Length: 137
Length: 121
Image (cartoon, rainbow over all chains, first blue to last red; front, side, top):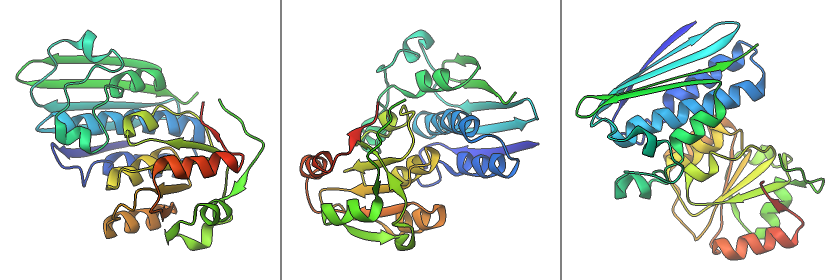
């Protein structure tokens, strides 16, 4: 099953729509709850990152019987230092994002903690691609 | 993973706190045993436990979304914050009990601690 979502930067009202939809899809497919949780936490963190930092993005979710593969590609300022961004507590979030309850610098480390494979790449001034996989069996 | 054998009905918790239930009143028999109190959704998303009550002074849609992603059955919003219709609608749709307390987070947590609930790991 392949799912595709458009994510708008700055839209904290819609943030979570993609993750919520994928969660329902995984439940209907009968994926184990603990696997759903890992995938959905990762996806939600990645989705909120786009809303918090980018102009817009696309989330592609590919579900097979073996794994859930998510690719989130955004257009935005990009990440200058990925190794810093992966450090818990490091954040470049705006005041507005922090007021929404995010921007504590836990997002990318949390994705890494919950998934089985993780890749990130970024070009400053262009955007970022986050790709991760959660194994079902 | 944190475990607490001392489970409480959400209805009983809400009564002890004196909170006002805003939706999902037919779900008050759900049980919780652990508490996370935080205004940082980033922090809440790192929790790896079950049967959690979320206490927060953050009153926005992402509070409900975070509860949804973590299968948190009940959320208490403290400090008398206004709760939007959007939040109530989403919580109702997802079966998440939303309740509101005029007390501070410190006071609410004190009551929950005295009732035998413990923190997430």
